[in-house]
Length: 107
Image (cartoon, rainbow, N blue to C red; front, side):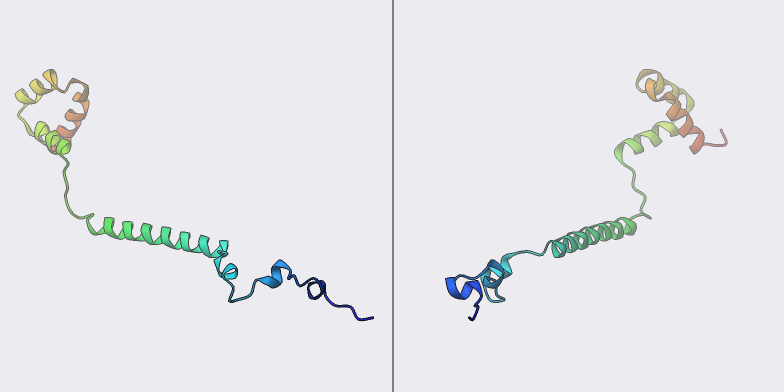
């Protein structure tokens, strides 16, 4: 007696046999390893781009508004410096005194 595979007798294919290279089901299943590779590659590209852009502008001097105000307060004469610290910047007195010592080491 000859034995035939089951799918010849029932006219049904197993799920593995039904997926061929040309069927849409075979190409629509994403490979999880490939997706992880793409995600890691994109993350690396973004980080590299950010590092390059940041390193291009490291040599520029940039003062934000609050830093500029701090430098101006530290450059004032002693009378106005103490007056501003007493009336407006009491919580930042030590910071401004240290900044003044940093900017004016000879005084």
